[in-house]
Length: 290
Image 1 (cartoon, one colour):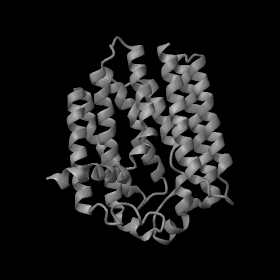
Image 2 (cartoon, one colour):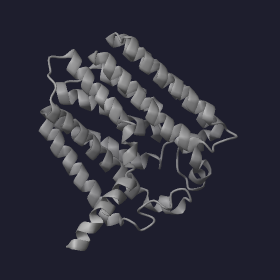
Image 3 (cartoon, rainbow, N blue to C red):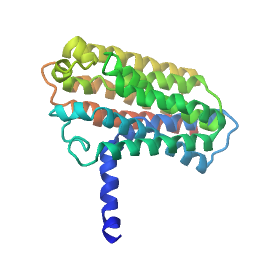
Image 4 (cartoon, one colour):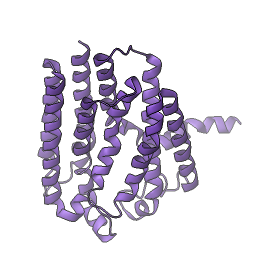
């Protein structure tokens, strides 16, 4: 028993590493914007318990999506030099335990959705289908990135529903922002591997230059969504500061990456996107509240 207790923190860290728990920072800030918007534009009162429910739903949903993605891709990851050290192909976590982890988190997500309100629960199975379905899309469509964007982008809508039991325009605009903001630059790392193993992605189909160009076009839609969202609710100075920082960081991503230099994809995708989401959310929430 003593030994079992001693390994628990290490076990938790292994599963957290498997699902890249630190990457929760990409979608979580947008969920908090949806939550804050609901409080400020309706008669709803702040509830710490409800906020905890929203955060738990986010964590369980993301754990389900990432855990299943790692499970579904375990054989592909074992072949890719970039991913062969991930927990499942490396033997740190067995496929069976990973699948149990996914099932438990999916059940917890459904339970929390039921705890939140009726609409959240009714929509939760559809959300799970999107979250899990993304893992298969790279097998048949180059536009799998859009499906991943949808999986991330439902966060602000879900948070708004948690507070109000309804759907509104502003969180839907945030969903559009997130759908077009994410993932294409990250996929530049695996162009040759994806092509040689009949996997689909925008860079694999259109090449590195084409992938970067499409990423720029998608980011222009993200910028448009940021502007429309701010105009829709009458964003103040703080909102536009946050929006400006977000747009500036998108531009910075494309200054870091070029067809001749893909060495800074980690900085462009991970670090810059994390900072962008936090900046936008922090200033938008401040603008809503003050």
